[in-house]
Image (tube, rainbow, N blue to C red; front, side):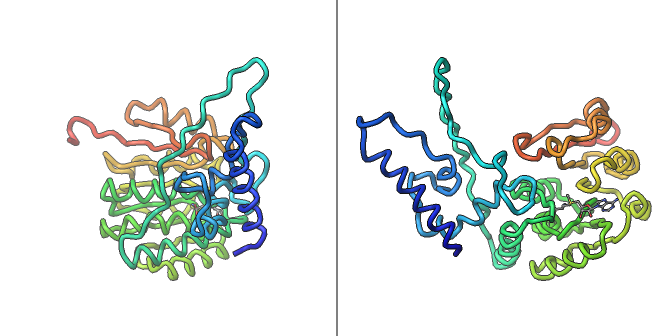
Length: 291
Ligand SMILES: C[S@@+](CC[C@H](N)C(=O)[O-])C[C@H]1O[C@@H](n2cnc3c(N)ncnc32)[C@H](O)[C@@H]1O
């Protein structure tokens, strides 16, 4: 456990305790926003388990995946202005960390935790988007998933957790051979390599080899290529299938892609996690004949 994190946690818990112990002697101190991040059971104190998990909790704030926390990524304390009322306290999310249902899941989650703690340069989706991908894969009973942009395999591992239960497979495309190699090793360690095929090369070209109907398409490669991917694969996505696109708020998405997924009557698109990097979930609607 990193000593700096322990010292930091103790400092936060001490300042929170002082604020609670001296009612009436000073205005109530705003709750430390970083304490909120580390205090995952929201009981106002940090348990030994929460201190041990501090690195993972902090890594979740690293939206751009560069391994560091910039001022923009750090949560801010509410600072009421002189003429403005104090903002209502933010509602703490009742979400809890993912829990392993069996040994295979425990093994994969351990690798995901490790990748969460060392995200620098890998541009992985935030953990909540990974969890959402797994949920969607399982909810649509996906047999055939296509991912564009593998990096070190982080999102592919999340999707493979769902594919274990649907008996499905993900074909993931990566431009950089070195990244594909790292992904292969991570998939092996996570115990899900049999659910994943990595295709190395420029996905704008390699997707021409895809021939089966796609149940879920996840687009997370070159950001200015999203429209081309959509145009090339829209017809391959089965009716009732999903097109999931990452980075719908950061980096700025291609307006032509946004236009394409929001103005096509054959598609139904909603956006999630826009306060983070943002993810779009698009349903390819069934026609009356396809019901
Ligand atoms: C944002 S990262 C993917 C992160 C990954 N989905 C995850 O969450 O773990 C984008 C990846 O797309 C790859 N990439 C960029 N352009 C590509 C292209 N034309 N074809 C295939 N992969 C590409 C990059 O090398 C990079 O590894």
